[in-house]
Image (cartoon, rainbow, N blue to C red; front, side):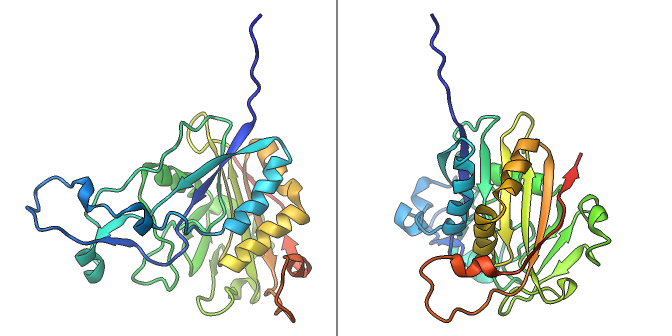
Length: 283
């Protein structure tokens, strides 16, 4: 008799580096036409593999997924594109080829979780707080999927795709939302409030895997939104996944209040006034 093996569905953390720097590599004295060798790549400690963004927010989303029979599949390190030091100093485009994040043979029912604002249009020369891209093939697939929902996304502004904005146009005035880069990321279009976004695409590529992106416009706002989802409305996440439809959810919330004491839990942030808009489904 054939033994059937049951495998839980998996979720993976698609991570970005936590600091605000690309990784320069000291150039070697060699013919510029010579092929690049592994000697020019930094050591693992220099890459800062342990310094990843939004770990607490990922833990909040992971707890939701584990409650619906997903198991943690692992960390996908999306290391920033490596530049030669002299090119980083003068602002030239990188010449070293991008690495490819290990997809670990992602299955069709797996989910990539991105708990960080996706740097679709970040420009280190103009953005105060950029997220540095890797330009890997997996990251490009992630961006292609998220571009169905956003026409533009960097730290300064988010522009919703027209198909996303159309069902919401009676509730928000403009699909182009600008956010302050100094202090709390408040938006004039949202009456000095900020925003949280939830995006789910069941097929990042044909036959999967899926991508789940949950983010605010800064680290604290991302954590507040992710925590709110786990504690208050986990059905928004599980419902999006269960529907197997391209789903967009917008939340608008007030500035996070000052703490009277040093917080030891996230309960303080559960009192933030949150307005949830109806989900938008794309075909």
